Amino acid sequence: MKRKRLLLKVIIIGLPITVFLLWITGAINLWFYGMGDISDNVKFYSLELKPIDGEYSVLIDLSDLESNKGKILYDDGEHQIYISDVFISNEENYEVFFRSRGKYNLHGATLVSGIAHKRVQGGFAFGLFATAKATYRGDTFKLYASGTSGLNFKDGDSFGLYLIPHDREVTLNIAEDPIIEITLSNLIMHKWASKYGI
Image 1 (cartoon, helix red, strand yellow):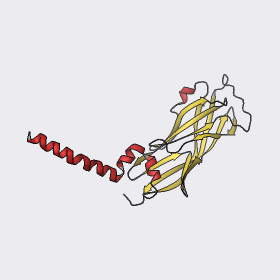
Image 2 (spheres, one colour):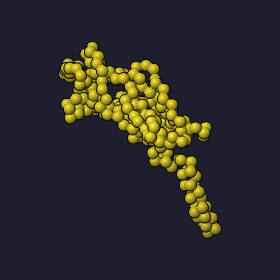
Image 3 (cartoon, one colour):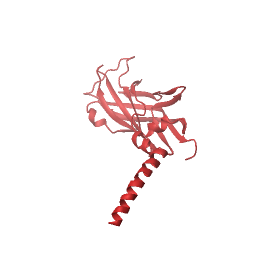
Image 4 (cartoon, helix red, strand yellow):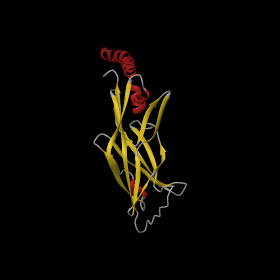
């Protein structure tokens, strides 16, 4: 009986203290909001942007759109960019969406993406930073963004590209050749670090 009372006292006293400590350190917000909470905290975290050298390619099969999900564009062991979806949009154009995943903890966060997330006076801005091109049947052409997101995921963002450009004619013959190669360069590393070395 005494042990049960002691355990009850420990829980009643310990639980609020634990919740308070998790709240004061930011662990609760980090658990709920992830990387977005770190990027929003301009007082505590600094942000450094660094372009990634090289070109990174992935092959897309237009005859089987579902088969492209999960194909890796970039992977350095800690950060990934992979295909999350390929579909035909309302404009009767193919679109590919990529998902970027990084890592985060109370000390900061890192993310490699095609989007540059910047701090600007009075708030934040983001937009496609990477250069994208496609090669289909030996013909190479520039690709344009169809959508970008903020840090809408706990561990990253997403961005989309139209696979057929609006400024030139590209004829697809999926029955003969369903494979299109997408190449991205100028990916960007984001590094949020604690200003206080914590």
